[in-house]
Image 1 (cartoon, one colour):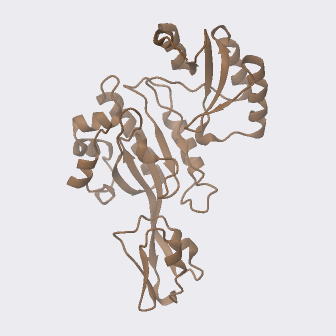
Image 2 (cartoon, rainbow, N blue to C red; image 1 turned 45 degrees about the vertical axis):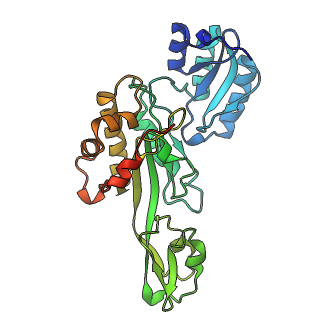
Image 3 (cartoon, rainbow, N blue to C red; image 1 turned 90 degrees about the horizontal axis):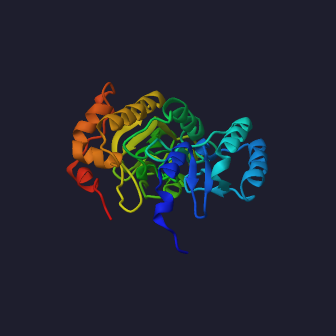
Length: 312
């Protein structure tokens, strides 16, 4: 299929993109990108989207890689109509371009592995910070409920991961080995009839504690690990962990600080990870974690800093 690149970069197309109307192949054809935090759609909204896709598009609905929803096949001259119809249905258009994207979350709220209410956290991030402000480039946030990180938080500008660090109550442990079977990383073993956790190998997923049939394990330290500077695409960068075991409000405050720091320090078309590299990881960490207890700051090792780089 031959596509004229100029079709996608006219002022009209770029202005539409900022409002959530994304240019697609075909003369004057767009997709309406909808704001759907955590990818949650009620049955009523699904019915409305089916109706609107038939009325304004071509009777189809797209699901994006970030759990978003798009209605394709909309003519450019129908933007005002569908915007009003979507508002009546209780959903808004999601801005594209150099703005914050809709927050993605895994299903940690209902997943047995989840260590927090991922849906609620994603909604709160949206409510507080996704205000449509223009930024140096796109800005993506993802929330994961456990160390499996199904929503790929390390590959977003900001990533939050729910963690639960296990501890053994030796007096209650019978050495049944259920925890050993539950651990995917061989970080639990039985020594002298008791479970022992290898702290170097443990990623605080909490599965061993959840699996213990005698409640001989608990998770006295829980919270959120915070990653920053990740992205994926033509160039890739795995986010670096800058804080650990944050409480919910601490994590939310950090998200807001990071977005504000990026707005004030990023260069045009520069993603957060690039800005952090240019400014220095240590300076960035100090700027966005001010006020947090120092024991919650992740120690940035030379190995971690060397791994935080742009790749192709």
